[in-house]
Image (cartoon, rainbow, N blue to C red; front, side):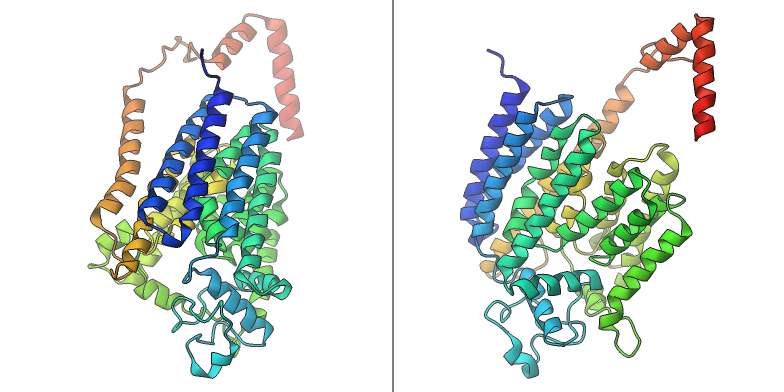
Length: 464
C-alpha cells in the first residue's frame, strides 16, 4: 500500500510533536544529550516535511489545519516551561520596567548598586549586567507596552507567540493567493520557533512580523506601509537595514521620509542631551563573538568595526544584485541579503535566523532552510558552559557540521545544475519543452489568434 503525501506529512508532524515535546521537558538542560537528541530528530523530520511541501503542488485544507494544530500543541509545551535563567527575556523585562519607572535603559547599568532596589526576582540575574541595553527604540517600546500589561517573562513569551500567530495569518493570506496555503507549515513547523519564541522568548519574532508586513505591502503596492514597516523592523533590530536596496524605485521618496520620521520619533523618549543613544551596541561589536565563521577568519587582520561594516556591506550588495537580477518581486528575496550579512557577522545565535523564517516558502531558499536546522549543534555551548567551559568558542566539529552541511548541499545543487542537459531549441530560439514555446508556436500558426493576442498585449501595456 502506497502512503500518500498527506499521510507522510501527518506522520512527520506527529514525529515533530513527540520530539519537540520531549525537547521541552529537557529545556532546563539546553544542549544536554536528551535536548540535543530530540531537537535533532525534530530537525530531520522538519527537513523531510519540507521535501513533501515542495514536491506536492497542493494539499487539502485538512492537512493545513491539522498541521497548525500540531504546531500549537508543541508551542504550548514550550510556553509552560520557564525561560533560561540568563536568557535575554530577563533583560527585556528590566528594560520595560526601567522605562515605566522613568529611567533610560540606554544609560542605566543593571549591576549599578544605586539601582539595586529596582530589580525583581526575574531581573536580578540577567545576563551581561555590567552593560546598558543594546536594543533599538522599537524593541524598547515593545518591552514597555507588554510589561505595562503584566511585568513578567511569561507575558512577553505570550506576546511573542501572538506575533508568530500573526505571521501565520499573514502568510496564509499571501500563500492562499498562490494556491499554496500548505507552505505556511514550512514556517510553523520550524523547530527554532518552538525553542526560541515559545521557549526562550526573543524579540526577533516581532521584527520578523513587521518585515513580513512590509514585504506583503510591497507585493500589493502599498508603498507607504511598506516603507514604514521596514523602518519599524529596523527599529527592532538593525539586521533588515541591508534590505534597503530592494525598496529602490518601489517606494516613493515621501514614503521613505515618512518611515525615517516614524523611526526618529521612536527615539525621542530616549534622547540624551540631544544625541541618539546606542547603549552597549559598540561593546557588542567590539567584544561579543559566537558562531561567526567569516568574522573569526578575518578578525586577526582587520578591526571589528571594519568587519561589522563588511557584514552590512555584503548584505547590501546581495540586495542590490537581487534588485537588478530578479525581474519579478517576491518576498522570498528578503531571506538572502539577511542570510549573507549574518554569515559575516561576529555573532550568529540560533534566534537570529528567526528573521529569515517567514521568507523560506520556496525551493529557492532551500540552503537557508537547511541552515536553520544545521545550526542546532550550536546549542551544545549552553551545556558545555554548565560544565565549566567559558562561553564563546564553539568546538570545531560544531561549526564544521553546521556550515559544512550547507556548503555540501550548495555544491550538490550547483553540480546538479551544471550536469543537467540543456533543453533542445528550435531554430527560432524557442525552447522545445517550454509550454510558453508551444503556445507561441500555436499562436503563430493561427493569424487570427495572433492578431487578437497582439491586440490584448497592446491593451495591457496601455493600461500599465
